[in-house]
Figure (cartoon, one colour):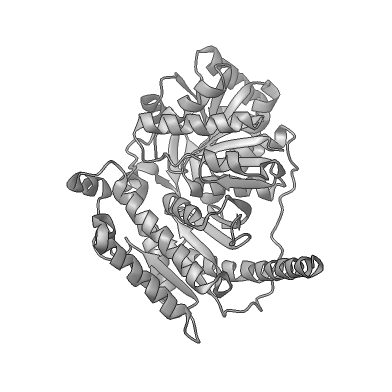
Length: 469
């Protein structure tokens, strides 16, 4: 029965918080929109439900509407703990999305904002976001193609975006312990603040804040990348304190399969990771021309067909590639998609949608032509790309399992003929230069487990058919 519900502004964010809940014993699924969550027949099997509103790059009024719809869906499920999952680099219209959730769940709720994810080296000190020891506005997030971040002081960033008064609790009060945090929160609330930002530099700080909030007994909207939501769920008694560790899998898995990669992220981090991956000749890159996809019509159809034909050719070989990378923005000149929308007279976001839909179609068609047995799993960067692939494959959701590193999330597809197929989603600003290599390795390991389950299910299905006659 769903107890914990979160709205994330993209699907990679949804999988990140979902994995943290799953690893602590709360079976959790990420849905690519609220309709998918509402139509899922097995939704009551999950303790945690994460819905992607796909709203990060949208204008504030559209983002508000999408988050409101997602929140209403969670309310109908009887959710007890609400969260607004935010990006670790604070991209998007966080303030307006907090407003949307608070307007829907009730005026008696207070939003507690803990933007830290210490295991990913994302912390908040003095109200300032620090990423890997660097001020947020000096990181690639400041120059993000669609959602650049220009404000480093988070209380001010949120105040500029929200209609509610924003308060702040500094690190000195957090280090003072649970009672100190409780008193600081009470004082801030009494000052009229309904959004309260709290410093945290390690996991112990996050746990202290969660414990204090639960003891206060307030109705709270958790606003964070995932760790605060997970600790809040524990202190609320919704799951165990034991973190599930992935069982070590012997590296005797077969490599007579291929990992399909759809890279929808254009960040320098992703570019470097893919360069390292493709330095091994067993991994093949296919560049898909984004201009052709944007132009549409016959030009787009031919470009998509060319990519599909190339995948089929490569995978049909005796020694098929270890992985195939499908990318539109990691080589050649990087396009400003907002300017491309204006240039072509398209609605906002249309160019990005055309590119992601095309990548999703290429993935679906390749799987459909060659069969799932030819593939070890799917690796996707960028939330919009993940959503497009899920839609094309007809899956209901992604059930979360584990992570390779924090924010590189391991799951399995639920629904359609690709049920239980391994998948890993990763944010564009996450990981070291070897992360893509590690992800491909992990998918081969997961494929070994999935293959046995899939084989057993097919044999069981055949047994039932034989005995039905």
